Length: 226
Ligand code: DX5
Ligand code: ZN
View 1 (cartoon, rainbow, N blue to C red):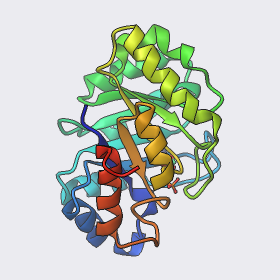
View 2 (tube, rainbow, N blue to C red; view 1 turned 120 degrees about the vertical axis):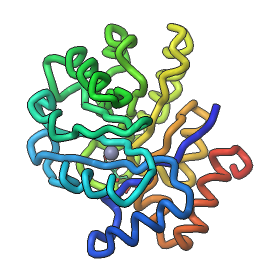
View 3 (cartoon, protein in one colour; view 1 turned 180 degrees about the horizontal axis):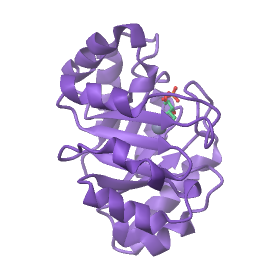
View 4 (cartoon, rainbow, N blue to C red; view 1 turned 90 degrees about the vertical axis):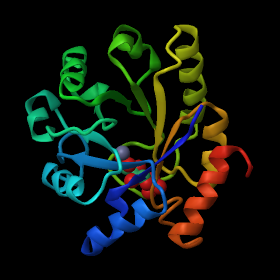
């Protein structure tokens, strides 16, 4: 199965956002991961719906929007304008109406994703499996870049893969988000992750240039670097 790099635009130098986006497109990113926070669901603000609109004007790369906001059903209209292949994820913990919101997301032309905080068990997926295109497993508590991986979340990736295979839903992609370093990506890849959020721990790290870091991540995902 193909593996994808979704680079986190909250890690961009915002003073140089447009050039940064062009550079990320040139190195061949598969998705742009766009973190939207409301300072309620998580204690931070990040990218806005307006920033998403201007991003669409300067790139063809599909967007992978991660909403970390309370009651997303009240704000979905701000994220209209989906292009084919764009993904929109909400958190399971953020609404009482998970199934309804997921079905609205598909009606808007997005692939629908559900994000799970580290403490949220996988069994919440069972009743919404038909409404899902992606599961986003948070490997840190959401809200900030630059955090350390929570070790128990690695096993959760494997459990999620096993569950999806068991229920015949292998078409649902697994995304991992938070401290996806080169070292952690090797493990996450073996456990069945499909989409890797690349931020300060990998493509933006000081270890190499953007191009070198991206090549290294690509090799890891191909399984040719362990
Ligand atoms: C949270 C964000 C962060 C971050 C990823 O939803 O997506 O996890 O930008 O980059 P790291 O963890 O590598 O700084
Ligand atoms: Zn995210």
